[in-house]
Image (cartoon, rainbow, N blue to C red; front, side):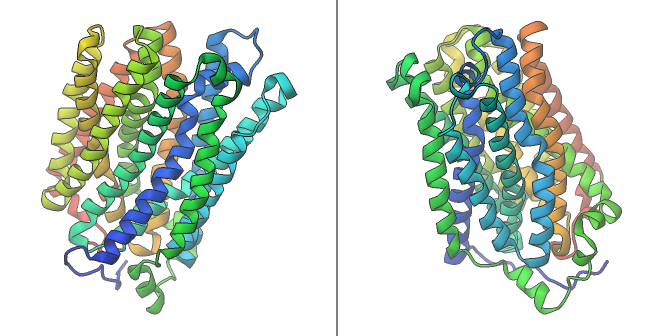
Length: 439
């Protein structure tokens, strides 16, 4: 396949680039907040949306099952949105995804509980999570594609890193809101009405973010492709082209997504709960440590994105994942010493930021005509399986096998990530995989 569309020439970021990055990151942060706030209140939700006489471990598992449903539906939403995004433009789908996230989040904050409507309560909650999953399936790949096609090719890593930091900011917002709720409300108030506030806030701000995205412009590289009438490939159904002509790139992108899911799901989202249940930490200490870790993640995603623009991506991934493997091991082995929590957790958050560089690989290995579909299929399919099953798997293993099960899982995957980086490095940084309109 010969790409005639060329990427934005090498230059520095201008005011329009920064505006695009800011609006994309803000919208992504609010949408990601909407999607993950569920896990911060999973213990409360398990009490409210299931029978009181149900064993705590079972209601928790079922709550994580509903949470996982949002991940399992992501590939469908991602494929549909990416298909139309490759045909008709990134901006339209990019804006639609945030609307489809904001409304269900708002509705969750208004749902009646099991006490009021019985079995319909968890069913409605499940329906809202499925709607959220459809939306986020188009948001993250769409955001990476959108900013990568706006900025000069020598700043793609930085742009993707900043955007991933923006998504991480959504996790930070969730952690801050959760900390505030636990600190200023009693357990009774939280159960009675306090848990609704984070969802209502998320829904309202999501609608505001959708309005702000009106000011975004379609990507220049997509408009150029339209002008040159190079959509024949996309009209063959982009995802089919992805699987038939770009299978190695797809497999590598899915494997990197698996590593990413371990860092985000286990260390950032589940560890505060595990610290309380398995290691006896208070909710405030666990959440404050989590805040420090997320701040480290936000800084590091941008840092590693910048490194991708300067050094061979195989080298960056290999070194970053190797360091992460070591620091994560130290973090989990030191959890019996509460005095080290804030230091080790914040450092762990920083080293996990290597996942912010993975987007660079994904957006550069697929050509313009199918880029959105390629990134979306790879990312969402892998995240649906790994992100969807991880909460259930980790919750079960930590309760019935070993409280160190999360550590073994994450350390193993980041070690695997280092091997992927080594593979890219040995294969001359895998330049043969890079799309012609990026190389």
